[in-house]
Length: 106
View 1 (cartoon, helix red, strand yellow):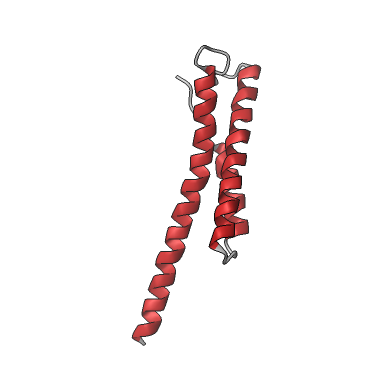
View 2: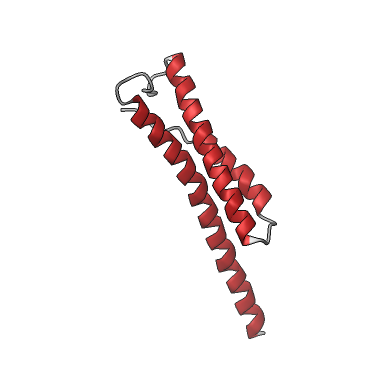
C-alpha cells in the first residue's frame, strides 16, 4: 500500500499563507489559493513519479494502479493547500470577531 507524500503541499501551503496573510481582497486570495492548490497537486504528482522512477518503496507509480495513485496524490496536494487556507481564514475571522467583540465591551 502506497502512501501519499504531503511534504510538497505543506511547503506550498506555508509559502502561500505567508504571501496571502496581508492580502485584504478575498477574491484575489481565493484565486491565489486555487493556483497554489493546482501547483501543489502537479508538483506532488511529479514528486511521486520521480520516487517511482527511483524505485523508492511506497511509491507505486509503475504498477497497474499507478494512474490512480498519481490522481490521488494530485488531489491530496490540491486539497491539503485548500484545507490549510480555509482553516487559516476561519481562525483569522474568529480572532477578528473576538477582538471586535472585546473592543465593543469597553
